[in-house]
Image (cartoon, rainbow, N blue to C red; front, side, top):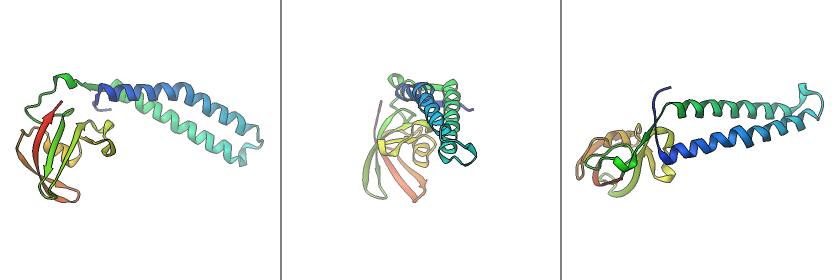
Length: 156
């Protein structure tokens, strides 16, 4: 697995999720399987099949999170350069094409969540803004077509 860039907050979130899956999650699914087995014939037991599928999904998620945490590079938000746009920066831009201002944090893809105003450094906008300076206007090919973004603020 390639290097995964996460904030300290992101690492904590994944560690908590992993702990939950390994303890509470496994216990709950084991109980669901036990109850489903009590229904009898396993060859036509939909509850048993569903519980086993959920168990497999959960185990896969555990493996994925463990692999990600083994390859994590923590973004040190205290030492982020604000001269140019970097992963971890919170930036305010003006989309000149739409005449709209927006503020978001650029994070690694594992932490991206547009609803929380966290965009991936691998997304067209995130990737396009990286390395650019305050007050620069950057042309980016977005899924909705070309757009121009002026960088209004770069902060930690």
